Image (cartoon, rainbow, N blue to C red; front, side, top):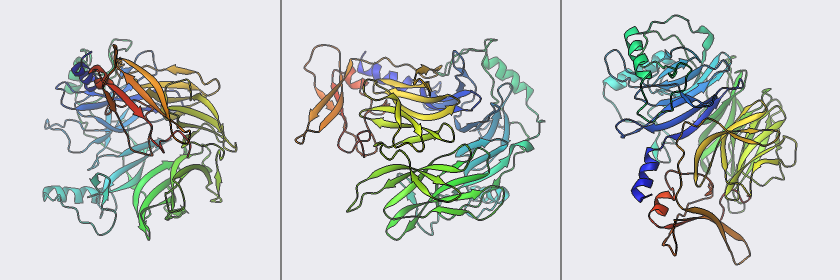
Length: 512
């Protein structure tokens, strides 16, 4: 394989972006591929619960935020072509049942940043005009701003920027809607539907998942905008600050939110609040902002009584950076350590009201751990020395978890892990399987104090010696333990270079 071939393979590959699951067993993959012109990547959805992936969504615009209900209905944000033949300015909210066509549920200027569905409640995160108290006001203010061709942003306080982008002009908020209010009647364009049916029976030339339906066609997703939208959103009352993260309990009774705001000594100090979504009361402060540490939200227990939080200790003149998993009792507001003898940075989910499953970087690889919330440390379910995968995006389905797995030389693929045996089974994969070049070996050097500094070494085919490229990453929030399209060693080995991927000091996976 030549260097150009290796680069082209990476650019042309279908890429697994993430998974959506429900407890009933449906598994949906979000994946991306180049459009027909090769000018941009499109993200779409495929059902991967069967033997082969089955593409579900259509259109020349990407699917954005998405969620799945327990009934199997998909909800997603996407732009579609209007009756005037032009794409909508902002993504609309759509629903797609397991069988049938998609229908539009709501429009929102600015689109939808995140969607969660719990029972008959939908909670969304979206940007709104800073003066707006409801959707009508947001629509009017947004329309006025657009028609006046105003693009300026007026800031009256911090923060005004986050990493590589300015904040605003809108602010991210949460809103809730009652899905039981959706009517069953809506009109659709039969001419467009007929055209879609013809298009769906043709081979896919844009890199989408293959056709696998019983009748030889894929499910059809609406590409024309029906005229009826009937889902109404009510804004939730958020505390002051920038919305960073949130989680909703299984019964949609409350939402935990993490907000950041400046305090003396810290420009981005985090607070954790609880919001009752039905009583319209004031938010309840659970975790106050601090200068030397911050809490982030991981998951709410199935019974809604506790929440897993990660406490991150900042670097100071007297303390090292570290992260510790904790459980917050939402009634007493007491905090307790979780797995205190474990020395990893965990990304956890609740398997049940007492059992936690978590991923972690682990010595240049990844592991999945499982244990009771009261255990001193968990047991490794899968991963660690002797295997090659790193794992991400755990989602519980009964006695298994669904996740993505990858390695330095293995592109992300969907898997299921049995919570009892730890057995890994591969799911139908809508993404490309990329054949690597050369070989991959693990090497180590010993420091003056005896510490082993390990690395992955990718070697090209043929006899050496080879010129060497060193891919040095920053830290400490990372490890060379998973696939990357951006810093992939494949094009270098195809060009005859050896590639060293060392984990420098303070990489994740070696303890705090």
